[in-house]
Image (cartoon, rainbow, N blue to C red):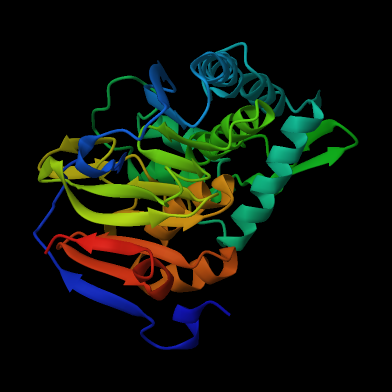
Length: 350
């Protein structure tokens, strides 16, 4: 049993500034802004964001070759797993489902979908990547996000069929769907898979100590000069300052989901890109949720699911996912964290 579920209030609540919709990211926190000795650090752009790889304790040539391999794999991954650009595996799956056809998929794709099905069930389908039609209806399958929101009639029509990843099933490596309205969009947990791929690429190259950062979501490997990595959660009111500093263990995955990241304003109301599948309406419970877990796909899934779950249900969903370390910023600025997250806390700016 996770500690915060064994007590009515197994978490700590603190008050900081009011954050509204300001940008909040996880970022590398290198003490004194100095990188460790014998480091190789490179960045590149993919998934619509900056990717940073920091390697410690490996010779430069080997480190650079490993980073190049990660970049190549990420570019291919982005093409294959993009939800609405034609040509990739997800686009082909979605087309087959819409046509009521079966499609052969590789073992790796089948395994990831089955893993996601299990995790989605553990979230009571508050996280459900079969809602591509709904995301497109809200306009988040485009580079520019703008209103108006979809009508109640359109939302209710979608809810009447409620496409879900549980509608997908396999016969050997053939993928089928019970519901032709299923359209997969793995934007909510594909970065977790990508980080696992990057971590394996580094370990296969014999690299033991590194950080991989995809737009603020992080996978830690090993240590920084025999010390735990320190990860900063930036102050959304001042991105150059951090609200908190966390200690990352050797294989931690740290993910943040927030209602501030992608949104549009319409007639004085802000609409986030994170949609509750059970209401077909954007989540608005928390400003952000940060989680730590050793499995990157689980952490990625949990950050979104807990944000959708909101005040009443986030503890139950976290327990079902086996996620113990949670850091929440409420829309009114309160910070709430579990006992497991409190044990990782190095510093909190109050």
